[in-house]
View (tube, rainbow, N blue to C red):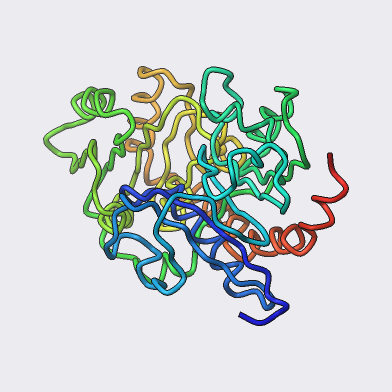
Length: 319
């Protein structure tokens, strides 16, 4: 590390691959590729350490532990700020970038809520998350919105078009009981259907999306910016996903997807309609392909780097 490099410390507790880890990995790489900055990851001792962990490929940039650790800039996502001394977390002596991926940060009964009183440069994955934070009246520090993105080119390179031998894929890892009920109602002898109601490797799920004509998502009722819908669009599967607040910017009902209310009857009706009218959905699938272009990593990186470069000034001026 040269004298001008700024040490940026990330923190993760990794139990399995998930979208929230993937997003932190993307930001880690933005820092890694930026001249003058040197990222490092503090990974908790109990974290899973195998090829499912993205940082497995850069092990020389990983330190194990969960204690205070010096840095020029901290980058956190979620409820854990352990690399900052407990008595300094409210007003860290160096900038803290807090990546806000969940609406839960704005819920008073959630442990994340208390962190809003800690001074931080907050980057929200959607305007819905940013608005929810501002409405609490508890936030200290500037709030930015950078729409969460996916690696479209890498996704399409790894999973090129294939035969769509699945009529319907139901992704219900977050709503397994609803998924089983929905699958029972939508299953017919003539319909090839797959229900995913438990964790599977990310690559296996992406491959199933590539093969599915229609993908029905059953997420939590309120989410910040769930990414699997964008992945399905990038892979050419028609998306049916209920309204979960954070997906309103890119799951556009009747334009590139079907977005019913979060009501089981309406969800089943929307999925059945997509299956029955699939041959007429070409214009919506084309719109979906256009949508993902606006949610690709280069746009996210361009939005983040000015914040990174300006972190010290933002920290000094904002109280």
